Length: 288
Length: 288
Image (tube, rainbow over all chains, first blue to last red):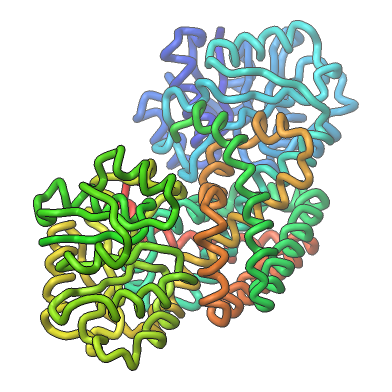
């Protein structure tokens, strides 16, 4: 399978690495408007050659989009305009409703698959690409009834070869749930960092007094603004609802602390402890 | 050195394990009002024998308190009442101002050292005790001018043998900083879990859609309510200020999202990214 990857960052680069390793890709073409990233990806051997989008689309069986979500909609349209009838185009972004709306009426909609592999790290760029990033993770396919059987079969084969578990849901459902289980975690981390860095002008105090707990809680705050600002914009409505609910929980927590309501606090924390059961499954699958 | 450990949970148990391993403790006595914990600790070989507090204090060179902070103040007084003049008593709790006030006027105040080893995991009980938990971590000694030279020398030797870096500050300063770099992270995690568990009634959605990012952000939400409720109560004033600031940051974040202010969001996230530099040091020291 000849694969063209548009966007040679963590996701595109890791995908290229994994598809080369398992032999599914017989040719790997890279497209990236960031020349530094493009050259780094080539140098790292993530792709065989660099091309323009037109060239990359002309020779591919599969075109994968792994670019920030604010660019993905227009690029998806441009790529669908360019490709021949049997070529499959798949998007890997973290929001799905907007892009699905943009390509909805495209005559080649059937060739397009809206996907979201739930995998990543807080690192960015081709240098962060990891072979095996996707193994044992979940890949979500959205609005699958809009994709042709052939396009679905192609993408499912790719995910299977990457050792992913494939699930399906509507793009609307995807964006609602992902706001809570992923996007909100990022905001909570970013805001926690902003708070601590603002108050602790002398970073020695953070360095000396913060333990592994702090490091774990703020890990996501290292994530790239250029990737996340567009996600927050596109999923504004769902994230705003999630964030409002989170803020209310914190206000309630603060009230109990101010009232020194030990029992109320213990009860909230016991409820939260229930996450242990859920996380057990995630952590078994995941050593990132 | 004959060591009596009061409280055989994660911290007390790990301390016992480490002091046995490095040979500093020639005898290890355990005291715990929770009979199940006490017996488990004995069975795991964390301590040589179990005793009452009176017995344990009568035969120790060093008595270590590793119990919830709401109990530690009174137990510190009781232990100081019991011990002979050369015995050192050290507390390991996560809040230091309250306990320092309680023992302030005690005639044996010099024998007491208020310490806080910055080490731990989200797990609880003797079964969670880890040898080497303290290696390469920081231990904070508070209000050191109130402790005798002999008591300080004893505790510093213990921390040195545990391979800890010792720093000193006032108990007031300790509680202020720790509210931001530790206590706030816990609340942010607990409240995030409460939010996600409330909205995602079907836990399959969390299981399928949450990645390592969510797992990392909510790791601390597995922590024990019985330990944390008293910490929140004792450090109420500082935590309340930290939490108010965090809530304001989140409200600001939400405003920018609602306004789809991409530049404003990117700028907040860039500021938060600065934590990368600080974390580098912590993570090098810490693979918990």
